Length: 275
Figure (tube, rainbow, N blue to C red):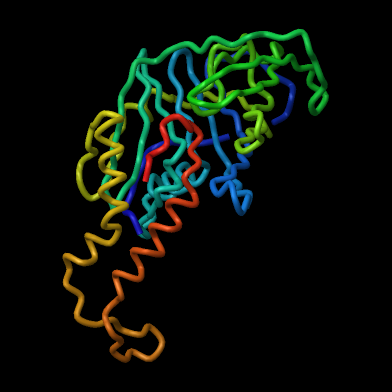
């Protein structure tokens, strides 16, 4: 388990939309990490946007933060999947997060408006009239169906720059699919959230993309380094309380490495680590 506390809060889609400066949008994400097995994973994501800032993260992050914010004694733990697609935009900086071996890594980059190609095709999605836009981004071809009915220029993950909210978004291979489920106005203060700390056991480590790739490769070559350093002599059976032999780290490492290779299909495919 990775001890992880992140401050954020949440929202609902009735399609009666009132202009406001702060919105929360829920997206259902379906993704395929293993392109051979093609097992579909599902995530519930939230986009919270206010003026020129936004946070995009999993509902799990917001739920656990809500529990922590209400002073419940039970500590909340987040896994690496919880922050995998998390983005925080403040002013002209966009931040990405990776949780590797209990360390939080943060990459800060300049925020760029994406160059979509608007198409003439339209279609109705959940009684919303949408227009098609296409984009090439980080090794994938993307198709977005957006609606000017909702004046929101930010979208899920990094996808921004359209003249309306993204109702549905997918790459042409249908390996990543975002579908909007609800929108809601909110009076909550996003800036208060963005300015709060994000922390694990240690302070966040700010690095570059090249440095992050080296971290991934190091973790791949020795995935149980932290456990090995503890020099475990024996394990204890939770049911019987009896001593068990220490873990077979070599066997565990081979299994972990196989899983990493088979699930190496990131949303930014051009940035995939070459294991």
